[in-house]
Image (cartoon, rainbow, N blue to C red):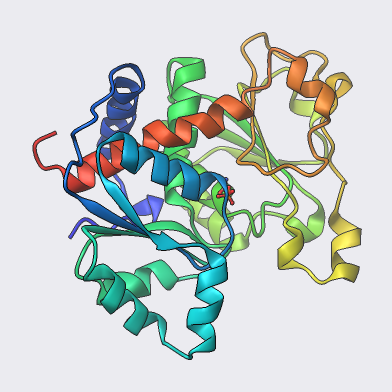
Length: 301
Ligand code: CP
């Protein structure tokens, strides 16, 4: 079974294969690649981009989708069914099982009970490997390489699963990182230790301005209100806001990415600058997820 649980399960050559496949699928549609295959898309936690881009990816490759979003999962939980039982049943209906769940480790647990490949679409604040695949594809598309880039990560680096997955993946490509976050939301120690052990060059900084002229990618993230109580949230919200003024001195080739949704961390005026690339990034979710599904489900690709 090719379960997709954590980005750290991928080698550099596997990531490169997925990116190459996404590049091809963006220019050349394959409407029959998943013909006759059924994918269960089960979101135990809210999603717009991940769910809809997965479902678009499946349908554009000729496959069919079954599943639910979080409103149905609430009724599953109300009935008292365990995740293991839900997984055993749902995996018997499809050829792959795409799953988002609020608990860290839920996708790994599901893979122990599933009869088909499980694809982690986000588990709590742990991992979001398919977001990383579209991020890597987008970085490659905008910079022509993944090797040796300088990338600043800004916002909620503690709970931000997209940052956790992406730094692990980019550490295979000799990139340099700057981490910019409110103190209460800094990168977890275990991930910093992991980067140090791998000899990755990273620095913790106070502001975006101090690194602006050096960076190739500015990766903004949202402070995730749903992971705080109200009193904690007001202390960490809106500390880092990107405006056109903050971008002064940026390289012409700089691109701003954001997994979306945004709240106020990127001012609307930034959308009109040549640096903004987050909506193209969201669209790339379709091609990156098509590439992954094709490689997981179609042995002939
Ligand atoms: N980027 C992302 O995971 O967005 P959704 O929560 O809308 O899926």
